[in-house]
Length: 383
Ligand SMILES: *Cc1c(COP(=O)(O)O)cnc(C)c1O
Image (cartoon, rainbow, N blue to C red):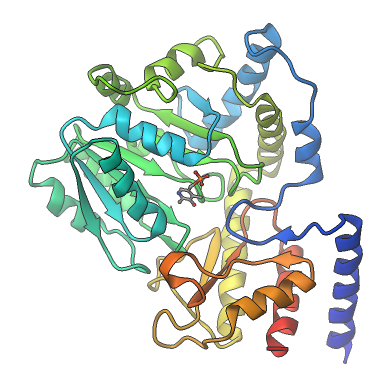
């Protein structure tokens, strides 16, 4: 009874906030994620000239926090595009002879296609959706000597699978000349990634996932070896030319006019991240992902990712994509959740409807996640 009253109370609270935001649905999809009022407030700071001292001061102010977050002494670049701009740029800048694209879901699979569209010699290392990429699989392919670059999606957002980045990075010692390109779009700032220590050559992330900023800005960094490789490559274009980014970053500038509003928002967010503390932030993400997996199992679902490789920032619930799914009506669940003011994801690509995904990245807390589970329980009981 008390629980019912609590649920009704939660619903009233949500309906109230729902009307307050005039139809704003709270995002629990794995990107874009919910953006706080504080971040929007920073975003709307009046514009400045992008070649002014004010801009240089702004970039210089975010740089140390970005370097702390990426565990690097390298310059961190700011790209005005969603992550795909940098993902394509990385291929154009760093692949000379051939690239091995590690594929385990929608985003990583598409990178292979993008590499081919850039005119690069590309080969696929494909594992089943739901499985991670393992170091021995990469090792076996690199041993052929055919590749001078590898692309890896750390956290495959479509399947909720996180590959063992630290184990994979050990291969760098064996293949020092192979460019190690890592997409951390849905993991950076939610999970520790020590750029310098791991020997990654290019690490990139869009900011509309774990950073909880509006879409349109990317953060990335590159090793000296990556810059040397880029120097030797023709046809790397202009907009995503690493050499341009490095030259400009040395003067606290970007090659072209960036989304300045995003950089104000990023500054505000990085201050929050540092105030929370990196370890506390990573622990919070791990905890919330664990709570979500526990909720799914309590509800009688299984998880889509292979045991032990579940993402720390989102949960991909199996609903019949693999044996053991409950096979609920996912579009109906999404609709019932919308009526409660919350947007959840109904599965991506070919596992749409056979999985659904719940994001716990960004600004979520135990309380906001608990309220999500309560509303999911209510909605599921109405199916
Ligand atoms: C969202 C996402 C992308 C694509 O990002 P865009 O912002 O759409 O360019 C790439 N990789 C991963 C892992 C993602 O989650």
